[in-house]
Image 1 (tube, rainbow, N blue to C red):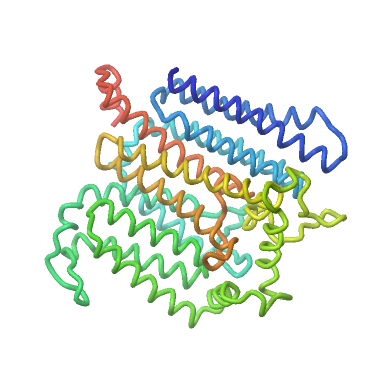
Image 2: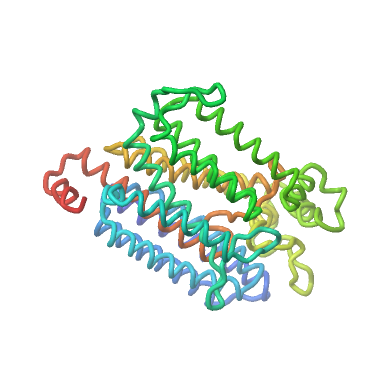
Length: 440
């Protein structure tokens, strides 16, 4: 079976699962069955098939598992969002449509990821601009300055900035990995390469700390810093960078804990939520109660104890930061672990694409995208389960939010383009290789 036919089969199965999930939620909410849930599932499947057809035309050799995984994650998220609020579910559907358009546009405009390497500095500058714009013109929500409001819409620029910065790092590290691997001086006793080559990377470290201070967002700052360190290690294989970067970030986080009230509060809630159970610790405790109430297998979509009789969620921000709690409540421990396995599977396939990549830039790009996706999933799930301090970033493809959904579909498009390019080069198709060379 060809890659695209395998993907099509998996997508049909995802569509069937989506219809069952929506029907379950609808029946539990309105005590009736309706063709609307089937129609909604079919519309969802059609959007996935549009992505599939674009792949079949332009990315015929791309990985066949990434899009079905994304489809299943999106189906789970949409079902839970509909359970919480049909209005928000409708808006999420609109964002999914916009995300599919961006996916198609990315494939048609970029065509070959190798072209991005030529514009790495411009793309990196765009990423920094988006972060700076957040600091200057952002709106504070729950203590963190993450959003920009434009014409009635809320946009989270950091979701797009993370992709731009990964593209920049992939190009810069690929070009300078030899020089970065050879230390010529010492900084605080640590061997470092020439400042000429290490300077841009120091800017990335400073940027992550500035984000922590000015946006008061520990999660996104941690995401940028860990992605930066991971890609630096993958390019140079020098463990000293990992240790030094972790220590520097720990020092910065310690300073923020002492002097930034919002960061201090997040750590305090993580250490002892019971102390403030009636105020700042209420949200996390309700989340833990909801997950515990789900038991081993839960009661099923639409039947978990998530809502009061007047349909007010028991956990604040349930559709965004705490969507994992909703899944664990209705699908139980098995469903929660299953969701985590989907994220692990996507991340593994992303690294598989990186290993198979035909050139250094594509390898680092795919590895960086897989890293940022996996780390973001870990950070939010770890916060909700009290493994690490709670952060305000979204759970990819499951949480409600247009910025996250659309940006991550662009991320998937880039991964698929790397996968397709690698397969074509490995297969040795002369015609296709010449076409890729022309596009690059």
